[in-house]
Structures are given as C-alpha cells and as structure tokens.
Image (cartoon, rainbow, N blue to C red):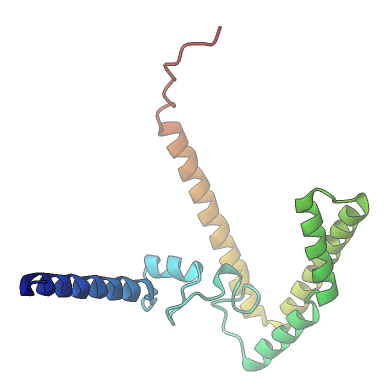
Length: 182
C-alpha cells in the first residue's frame, strides 16, 4: 500500500471515530430546567426537572402537591399515608397473571370479577388517602390546591375550545379519485 492510501484510511478512521463520539455525547444530554418560562414548565410537567433528568412527571411529588410548600412533618405523614395505601405484591402478581391471560385470550369471568374488585378497592383506598392528606394540610394549602385545580380546568377548557376552532377551520379531507368498485 502506498503512503497516500495509508494516510487516507487513517483519516477516514479518525473521522468515523470522531463522528461516533459526537453522536454518543449528544444522546446523553437531557434538558435542564432552570427558569420559569412556559417551555421550562412544559418540560417539567413532562418529567424533566431542574436536575436535568426524567422525574416523576405529572404524578410526581407528594401525590399531586407539587408547588405547595409542605413542612417536613407533613411530607413524612403524606409519605406514610401513601405507603399504607399501596397495593400488596400478591395482588399485583395476580393482576399480572390476569393481564397475561387476557393477552393469551384465556380470560375467565372470575378473573374479570377479580380485576373489577381490585379496581374498586384501589379507588376506595385512593379516596381514603386523599381525605387523609387533606386533613393534614392547612386551610391555606387546601386553598392553593383548589386554585390550581381551577386554573387547570380553565386551561383544559381553553385547549378544548382551541382544538374545536382548529377542526372547524381545517379544510375537509380530499375526496379520493378512485373509481367505485362495481
């Protein structure tokens, strides 16, 4: 091999390795939320917190109490309530087996009844936990929650209206030019 070909192959190898390193480093980056801009808030709602990685998202924090100033004692009490109302592992394993039976097409009426009973039980536990958490909060904190709910409801209604307007303004779908099958 001539020196020219050796040089070209070495340069191409370096180029490939450098490109791979750049692509790999670009994939490892996650957005870091630092300011209070609408884009930052949207990223935080999707689970990218100010620490730069996926967080708990919309479900996160203390059971939907994000943005509410809680004392350490309140946080501990709320955590204890959530742990006490968590489903047991045996029930989760049974639900997993039922889900696999459903996928396999062998779901029985008895299994359907168990799932419904489990969901009803979890719904009751969630309501009980919610009432227990509300009892821990101060009146000011409860008011903050109600204010946030009202704001969220308003935003949802605005988005619903905006979607409705867009649908009305959108041109109708183009008719197909295929001849009818006769």
